[in-house]
Amino acid sequence: MANDILLKAGTLLPTIDERMRAARRSGALQSIDTEQEVMEDVGVKFLVRMVSSLRRKEAEKRHLASVGKVIKKPTNPFLPPEPDLTVAEISRTHLAVLNKFNVLDRHLLLVTRGFEHQETLLTIEDFRALFACMAEYGSLGFYNGGVAAGASQIHKHLQLVPLPLAPNGPPVPMEPLLEGSGPTCPRLPFAHAFRRLATSIRTSSIEAAAEARSLYLHLLEAAGVDALPKDGGWCQSAPYNLLIARDWMLLVPRVEEHFRRVSINALGFAGSLFVRDKEHLDLVRRVRPMGILQAVSGSTA
Image (cartoon, rainbow, N blue to C red; front, side, top):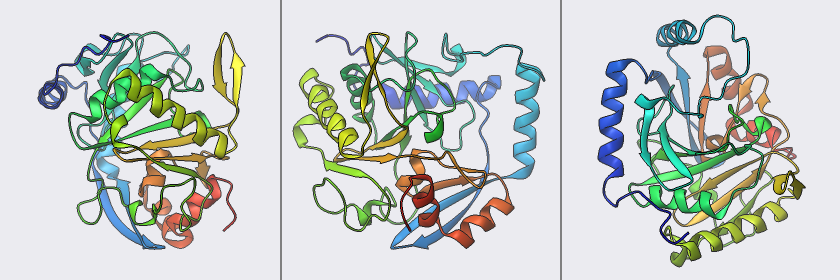
């Protein structure tokens, strides 16, 4: 396992940018334009993005043309991933792939080479691959543990987005409420488990990944998500979202994927929301972002 990391230092960011340019030219990468609005709630400046309706229709037309109007059987876009979207071999277990319908540039999916279910627990290999990529540029890692947590594919994949998430304020908008060392943050009004990361585990070494995974297991336990044996491995007992920054981890249990058809994934708990139209944007304004996060995490307002 000591030589499992294949990514060469200093190569990921230029490779991402080159691959993005080529994938846009070929049509493999279909970026989605958005309109942005900042909504301040409970001391957090949430960034709410709404899809540009014209660009959305164009993206939907291209998508339907590429896959056909009727999908006759389930498909796995990661076995194998599209060559035009594949960025790099990160390790012997993981590949880095561009998010095909991206809102943010440099949005990476870290995909297991062989099939693993999205509801299986994260492994030491998952953390090694993630940390190897995070060392290359300022970024936030996240994981949507299950469909009810916003996962759109059942093949295991972590995700990485560049920081800052918003043009103004802290790199992660939720950070003003992330106080102390854990296991919870007093000012966060939704169910969660939180811990600071030691400096020693911000590398892709085996020891760092093992320590990070141990911390992750403690967060699962603290949030009431059990590890259940299944098919010779371990899977989650309930859906959850995980955010991984360079110096902290935040885990949030989930009870619903949507709040009145507004889908929430892990980035919502970082302070970044995504809505499809003006009706949903108005809903977020009325209910307020933190109220929506409380609802989908089963917390009492």
